[in-house]
Length: 215
Ligand SMILES: Nc1ncnc2c1ncn2[C@@H]1O[C@H](COP(=O)(O)OP(=O)(O)O)[C@@H](O)[C@H]1O
Ligand SMILES: [Mg+2]
Image (tube, rainbow, N blue to C red):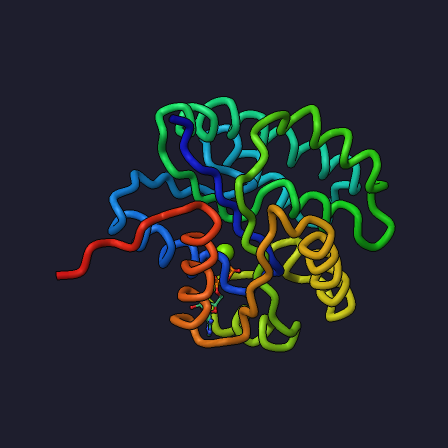
């Protein structure tokens, strides 16, 4: 049986990577084989593209169209070499960001038109749409504080201003509202365990997982 494909989306600092680990642990405890991955990236070639996109040479900037193509190039490799084979084996794939992030980041602030992005997504993703997408929503200020608390230097998207992050948040909210059959909106302003419990409940309900036996 084909495995399940779950994507985590939301702005920088909303808690995607943290939640991914929590969910993976619960799925494994429920007996699932879990593959954790991320975008852009997930394969050797896609990780090289990630570095090119998120950390372009000093003073250089990709246009939104070039960025969209690079994201989809990385996604193609990721789908071909990692995601589809894992799903065919019956594994559960948890992916930190996926196509919704391209819809959001490459269209905000005068980027690529949503129609063009949708066409690209159709070609690249095809039938491999996520079974479920957890959209993490938190106030921009809270996410910014978390990003600051986290070590490391800001990438090309993280480094943008408040207004940009507000637009990103609104765009993710719109996707969640427009596609309720796929998306679950999670209030990510709560403590980690509350966020994880809410997400886990949604996964169990929607993807029909029995709670692990307690003795
Ligand atoms: N629910 C939460 N409450 C408080 N801090 C959190 C929460 N979720 C994550 N964090 C912390 O905030 C920072 C950003 O979280 P992270 O999971 O890396 O976000 P993302 O992957 O969405 O950018 C990390 O330092 C993480 O430990
Ligand atoms: Mg992360």
